[in-house]
Length: 306
Image (cartoon, rainbow, N blue to C red):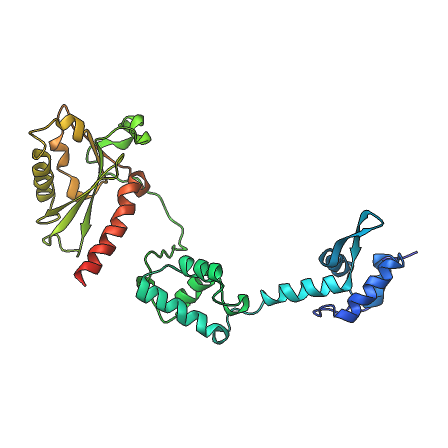
């Protein structure tokens, strides 16, 4: 009978070698208990159970399938798993992969996820010669790579500080909560999302007024003299006047903006045909279509300027 309470010193921080796996295979065939085998090898019972799970395969004997532990299978699985468990901080070992990543980001404006996915799909590197996208982002924020966050198409570094939600006192007009819920389905033309694109923080500099129609994704960019509320209202008013010869009710039914000060006067443009709503504070996702397309618009505009 085997007992768990004994004074045997267990061998720790050492992996099983092939000879020990072969010994384990023979003891299992003889029907010995896990406790006896673990005591003989100087390992914990957990180690033995883990190894049995690693090396157990299905074999067909006399027309019947059986679960059998094989030392060869356990060793092969161990070696395969070890390939992917190497220390990824050894940047020198993956230098060619890092150089390729940097060239794709700087020259072709690829993201880390796109480069890693492409390399895996095309088998450009061995598994132990590359790292995952998450590790690349860690390298980026630690300053290990030869590129910066601004070189990537999109990169966000979330603050670890606890955020405190405060009620914003500025309300420029009707809340988006009052907007017809049918607008969310994107089945009707004429509902627009509004935002601005600024090149600098100076209010006297020219800005772009960004308008996106929710159903068709039709995008309109209007040049505005400045980010002042009066100029934004006049630019938007001039755009609406271009529809005076057609049915405005079919082309522009609602406009949804954020609570920026540049939109503080556009509520004056409301009439019996046009309704203007304002998204909740800190809720850019309420106008997600416009937010998304502006990223690509700014990127293309920047490349054209270069």
